Each structure stands twice: as C-alpha cells, then as structure tokens.
Length: 208
Image 1: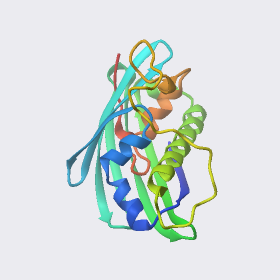
Image 2 (image 1 turned 90 degrees about the vertical axis):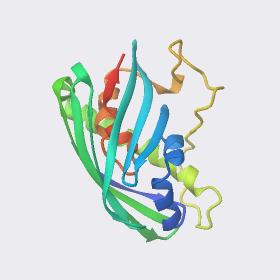
Image 3 (image 1 turned 120 degrees about the vertical axis):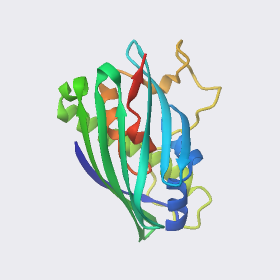
C-alpha cells in the first residue's frame, strides 16, 4: 500500500514537531489508544483496543524513527505480527513546512502486508486507510492547535479525542466508538504501520 497526503495544522512548526514526539499527545489522537510509550530516543510502542464485529481485538507494535531533522521531519519504520492474521511492515516519511495559517504536514507511506491480511482487497484497504489518516489528523490538528498563536485553519468537523472512563463502552470494555465492522481493521493494520507521528502505525499484533 502506498499513500501520500498533506494536512494543515494550525500551529507553529516547532509546536507541531514537539507534538509528533509527545506520547501523551499521540495517545489523545489515536482512537482506542491504551498506551503510547517512548522506548528510546528514537523508538515508540503502542497498544490500541478495538472491537471488530464480534471479535475483541488489541493491536500492539513498535516503530523506530530515523533521519531525524528537527523541526523539519523524520522517517518512520515499523513492523508488527498478528499471528494467524498475518503481518504488516512499512515506513513513512514525514515533513513539516511553514505555511499560511500554521504548518503543512506532508507524509508518504509505504506498507506491506502478508498472511490473511494480504487477501483483503487493496481498494478497501486504501480507501479506509485514507479515512483513518484524515480522522487522525483532524484530531491532531484540534489538540495541537489549541492555544496556538498561528491563525486558525479552515474549520474541520470536530473529532472527539476523549478516552476517559465516562465514554460509552461495549460489553468487552472497549469504547463503543472503536467498534469496527466489516474488514476495516485490516486498513488499521496497514495504516498503523506508518503515517505521520503515527505510532499507531506498527500496531499489528492481534489478540482475541
């Protein structure tokens, strides 16, 4: 899967850079995120919970940062294994540029899947991955843009990033908004491998 895009974040470039390297900010922006931990100066791991139809699923994985050029960008690489579900691996290049209204975040993603994941149609994976990426960036833009001195970008539909205890929960203890139907979770497994800060992007160990 190859995917690229850009998103205007209404905040100064330095602030955006710091947010992309802040586990707490990432946790707020990743739907269903339980943990984002910095494992080294260049590494993160993460755990995300979701309910895929009747299946309770948890994704876990790790990514490594390289070609780090503060506050201009970096390269992400990661790999995750999902047992019988297969595996996913890949990387992304992330670039930050000053722009009217804030900072333009550009990304280029390349991900590969194997096992059962590879049997899913590429069109479904690609389209769902793009939607997930857009949802992430909307939330990230809201979180990072709060209190920023940069002019506000064109308003997007609000995306809630509250993972608190008062949320509606499924009987399996997973936030209801993180219940996925059909095969959308396969897109998560590829997208999580790579996008932007997107520690989300190597989270492919599946357990249920």
